[in-house]
Length: 414
Length: 90
Image: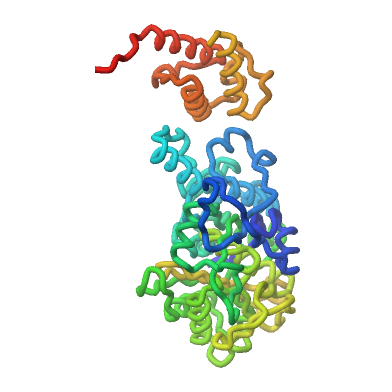
């Protein structure tokens, strides 16, 4: 079994469209959540939504990155994916060091080309207009992976995983296992999503789980999630290979755990989340005492945050109340299928820089949570505990947890 | 619509679809020269159909090789449509 490390990162997110921008916003607590106006698909007076904030990607101009042919054939979600993957591949010099057939592209995308589907369907249903001939390739959830393989010339396995809000955590975990086993020499792993359409927002509004103000994970006065979008990509390869080619190593992936609640399509259950965390630690050969930070799923809903806290207490026992935890959704919003990758990226940066992101948007923690939620400013990482978990707890009770480890002189000699 | 106007509209549609300046799209340019691939052809044909309210047969799309082919095809389809007897209400 090979040790697996991260040597490249890329992103297009509500808090930055490059890694330096993302990192700066992450530790400064600059949120990407902002008010939105009339949505493009809605007619005047039709918005009718009970919330007015979401976390959109801003400053992203496809013309700056992509040819007209690719822009025409893709939805925004695949465009995010291509650009983020290019950044990660460039940082790691992936294509220079690996044969195209030895690289995998494993992504999470749950919603596909949502806006293309809605716009074309609305034209068809309400005006009996023709459906655009590129609707199928624009709406395929797997389009992002296909376009990355075409763009970079990667001919190894390309997969899309759709497990709702755990999609890209499952994708990174799957890629980790593939590189660890040697079935792929390297991988681009991550996720992408562009779901902020009128229909999608109305659907979430109808579920009454979106904050009328802004996402405040673990807060005493939390009132729901905030929807987001974006992409984040990581390059994975074996430690031996990275060392041999003198690549910069940002963190190590040491474990991955998956579980299903087998309970309810929307109500989470703590046993399932706890099982995924335990499995990730077992896969890593680590104990709960080794964990110095958890990047929580932390959506800001009453149900998720209470259940996730309960799960953390089940796994970490008495130490749970002293274990630093934060959710970064107060900055990025909930990026759906991409959220696990965005949060894995935040966790990698936490390990690499030695500072833990704070739980933006929350001023007073719900006493019932009883966790050490990092507030107000980043906190120095505990140098004696070098493992961090990134949790994703999806609708349908599908849980994924990635265990990451700081890569430094200590682990280098391990 | 006169033939000059058809030509200008076809050129505008192709240029917009490929995000290139209109003056680079001329009647004699081949699709290869303009990097128009099979997907672009389908997309451009869709836009042309909408703009001129015509239907381009499938086998015609595959035979399009130049900007001139598109312009001539639109003019021909418009003439054919004009030659059809007007539908009468029963």
